[in-house]
Image 1: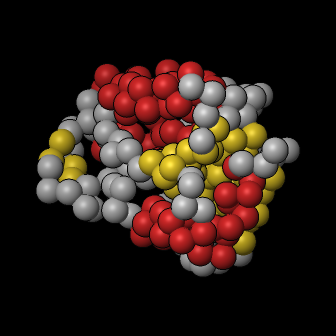
Image 2: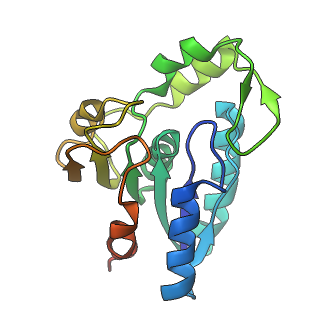
Length: 193
């Protein structure tokens, strides 16, 4: 069994545009592929526990797991890929999210697709810093980035994933314009023999 796990970004959800677009592509062209879209908590320890609990049983059964993540979801895919030796496609990924968390600490936050409100604390930032993968990387990655990303500097990701497959396009934005062009190649990359 092949399993594709899509990790959404910060303040996002499984209802995000790219997640749903890739899900439709997989349903139409790869109906045997199991497409998983976990709802990832903004609290890093809960997110790490949830993602481990999702992936470990699949691997224990000998099933293939490929990862796709956007923004903060790219960070989580890297964390999973390093922990379990998996392949991951990263779309405008967050590289060092603990550094950016200071701006959000104690602030009331609400996701784009959810009415629940929450706050991040110092412990969340410290946990995130402890979870950040270190170089050199063990996983196999494909970086998709656009230079017009208004949220994250693509050069951080370009440097962090140096030596891995990378497509860095001029212009675009944080949502990654034209993502649909890559759906087929993403699945081939993740499940290459």
